[in-house]
Image (cartoon, rainbow, N blue to C red):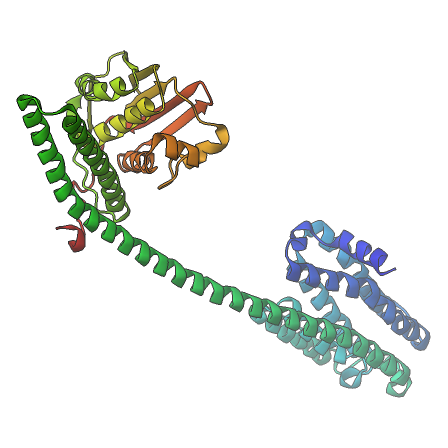
Length: 467
């Protein structure tokens, strides 16, 4: 039964009001009271019609005013404006109360208390516009007094003693109506209290999350500073180890030292070079995370840059018997960016390709993408290596992450190279994307603006990193 009534009520409620719980409740209450409230007032219409010795336009005006409340839900559906329809309702109720009081009992009329009901309903539905409600109330009273002054008194159509019955009916109807509104108001206040408590809990949680975030960021910054300092300290002895191992290796080769000693020296040198590369990656990552990276934009010929990078990458290709193919596309011209960091990114990609490819081909292709808003440089590194599955691609650019434990144990590395390269590309205004297929190789694409604009040519380093 109640579901049927609720569906009937919701038919009048605008769609916009259904999106918010408080608006929906207010609209439903308005429709319900205006569909069933006038039913209670029909007894007043009947009583006035039977009691008035000359039931004419006065009685029919009262009847029409009460019946007009049934039209308001339909007006709400058409206008979709609850405040406008509530304003009409309040004014209609005030008119019926004052008009009825003027003709039936004056200031002693049992219909006059409905004026106070109209005032309360005005504040209930139009609480955001209290001056409008007060202005309407004052205007209605002035009109009531004006009619009294012009008429020279109230129109006594029915003796006040004969209005006792309608007085009881009016009091009962007003009591039921206001009780319903009071119950709804209490439930609304309770709902708002629950919402306020829930909002307060969310606010406290948000504050705690913000504090935890600040602590995590400070801890992360401290970690980055520590790694940067330790990496910086590691590089000095490592350079000494590498330098002395190279000297000993050259001396051994010149003096015809034992082959086993030369092999041991080569291993020491290779291990030192590998460890230095890892320390450099950690230092780069920590400096990026600490916002202590210096970008130096310089203009250089892209073709010459590609030749230099290919020459540097030659020994990397020889390790696994790979062949490097350089494939420039079109006229490349000059670019303005951080040449050192771009070389680091490209060599990192070539090194990765060489490591995961055996007796295959690695292609370095470069092209200039001319656009109206500014040229872009695309550097692509394609290999015929082991490839990467689609589900493992998101792991590539994460710090200290590798595709799998098998990859780490078989090919080595810490998973920092691609993460550092991606961050360096982002600092230079671009990025890296990748496509790959297991068993068929991978393709890494670096895309950067041909002209790097640096607002500040240097990002100041924290004092803790300056050493």
